[in-house]
Length: 277
Image (cartoon, rainbow, N blue to C red; front, side):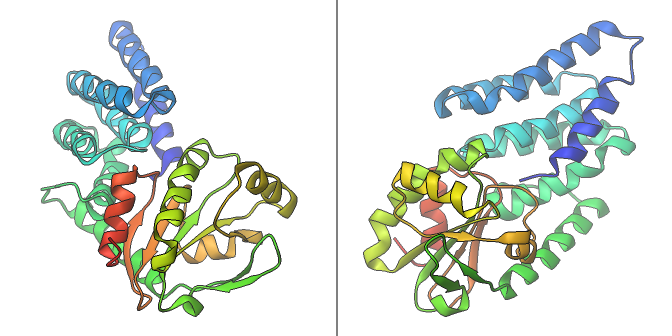
């Protein structure tokens, strides 16, 4: 969802900047290790762990806290409910005022994405935050106008605009991506529940046909898998990380987005925004 590489670079810079305070550094590194393990936890255990980590991050020195808070967003948003997403955003907002400017830049983009795509409350009067929202406006315009002409793994051809009159959930993913694999069962459930009411789920990957066919057969997928060689469609949708999902209503209007793995409740809310309940 977020600019992971930049955040991790910022974390390394922050955690390596104060070798004269080994106690603080040791604590921050320990928290960072716990953050990296969040995605391995079951959803209910992860929620409790995130609350605990959020409280501890707020107590860290400012030069560490902002990078740790952003990593909380990187590692904690997947599959989280609204309460936890708000906790993550509030933690960033709490530590941001005292953060060193040179490592705080990506926090504004993180908050903008949480506010725009996850529905969290962000009250922040800062030019950097306004600029981040404008960048999302530009990306969203491209996504609203995006189309593709792709073949599926069986040779069928699909275009997004050719599905007007249907509810469409476009999902960018890959077989090697753990969060993508974790959301497969939710996508199958949604397809089975809503297919007769007009839902089309399209899973788009840049992997080779053989790999995708093997995975689809092993999982008995009930929705089409589309081939995106060269990531042309992914580029048109401004997707920088996977999984990413986009929901269109019957008129072809983009109504909801998720730039990480949402939980089932969020998927249902996204489809509800399209008028499918």
